[in-house]
Length: 250
Image 1 (cartoon, rainbow, N blue to C red):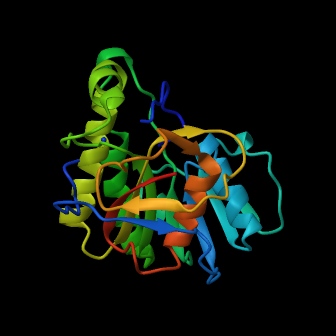
Image 2 (cartoon, rainbow, N blue to C red):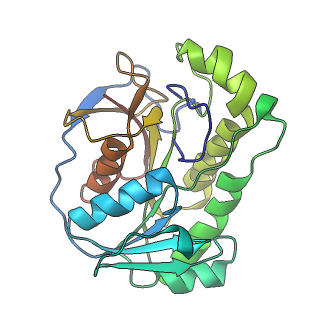
């Protein structure tokens, strides 16, 4: 889930790619790197920084697009850090030109009882899609959360605790983001990665379970950010998850 969300539980969109009984598959996240430059949004947050590090380890050229470049102290000859306003289409499009793919780890803060409305995800999706179109970039991979919309059987900790107390407006806005991409972005090849709660630490090395649904049954309610970003990177080198919303877990 986005790096800045507080109180992430095992942190739910009616399936945007629905299956009556979602098939759970496994991914090793070891798909070969096809190269190119990746533009990463939200690169200064915990998940974004993990994505930058992992992408560099896999040999990619990385462009970190952030509001405050001074927050990124990591240096590498394949890394450039650029200031960008994600709500200004022209500014963003200029940065995206020449990219192989755009990956997003943007995150919004949760608020008690959803007192503060959240629009970051849905509004940024509009400018990101417009900027990608203008820049001629079509591949987009974005991390969001399990259970962006209610579905029967959703983890109780989400439906009874996190959604009503903290994450209601955040999850609803994530759902709006996914819906906007599905209905209005026919030229964007998206993959939305619905992750459970995020933890720090090294990769587990385990195979990641994947389903076209709101959550994954029978897995932990959290997983390391490093495993999440490995899956995000694997998704850009396979057609298996093209224009899909998938939940992952370990």
